[in-house]
Image (cartoon, rainbow, N blue to C red; front, top):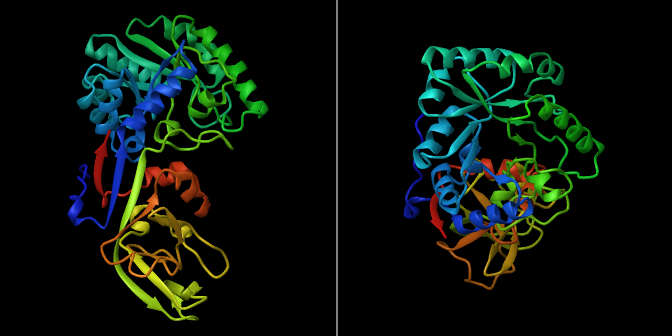
Amino acid sequence: MPHTPPPPLDLAGARLTIDLAALVDNWRTLAAITPAAETAAVVKADAYGIGIEPAVAALRDAGCETFFVALPQEGIRARAVAPKARIFVLNGLFDEAGATLAAHNLVPVLGSGEEIDQWSEIARARGRKLACALHVDTGMNRLGLGLDEARARAGEWLERPQLDIALVMSHLACADQPDRRENADQVDGFDAATLLFPDAPASLLNSAGIRAGRLPAYDLTRPGIALYGGEAVDGQAPLKPVARLDARVIQVRRVAKGDAIGYGGAETAKRDSRVAILSIGYADGVHRLSGSSDAAPGAHARFDGRLYPLIGRISMDLTAVDITDAPEGSISRGSWLSLLDDTLTVDTLARHAGTIGYEVLTGLGRRYGRRYVG
């Protein structure tokens, strides 16, 4: 499916404002924590929902030289904006994608002997050396070479003249909880892996690993969620928010005490109420579970500095907000209420939905009018 452009602001039910200056400031803050290491940027999932092209361009101009994506198509989009950058593809080498990766100078992160053998054959067929990263699993048990296989075949891979091992990496499973023993165990395993490839740069730290401040930075760090203002370490305040979300009021209605609001009658009005209906719903990435019911409160929206609770179940395209406590007439058809701002963070909204800020960010929909500032 082709990349779909967002609608113009005047035709959108909600608008997403992306602060690229905050994104750059967050990258610089993270880089300052590990000054001896290069700081890359993870821009997979459309740069965590904010748009891969503007994010890569802003970070490129700030001095970022290395990017990580998950999929080849993301790499192609990043390459169009950053022709001189190193771009690593985290999800490895798809059988059909080798020629495309090579043509766009994208570096696959290889996590199995089969992938390494296949990339070697592609390089041999093209008659030139091709770069790759090697992913060694140290405890995530998701992707990556087992340490035993890496030990058994490291010499063979190093002797292949067609392979340029540009990076050895692993991924932390529990860095958001710095006191977990698994973090130290993974460092020990990664140290063993780096000894097998002594001339290759090494990378272990994600956002949480950087912000925890306890683990070795090696040669390259790979921040993701922290760049975008999401919470990386449990209980630690996030960096600057990057995304602001405002939704349009399309109707204000009066609801009598005892009347139900929305699908399933999940919540009934506890008093005679005024309710603003917003043109935004779960099709736009506002999770259904962040609505409210008679059994549990939900998330909030903000207007003119004051919070107002969502009321009833969120539907596909609409969300109801209880504005009874707003001054009469202050919120009307055409007003804009904020669901994300400087203090209503992606993690605040996520907690009401029983999920994480990553899911809120990456689920930001294509129906928003988007504007980029900073």
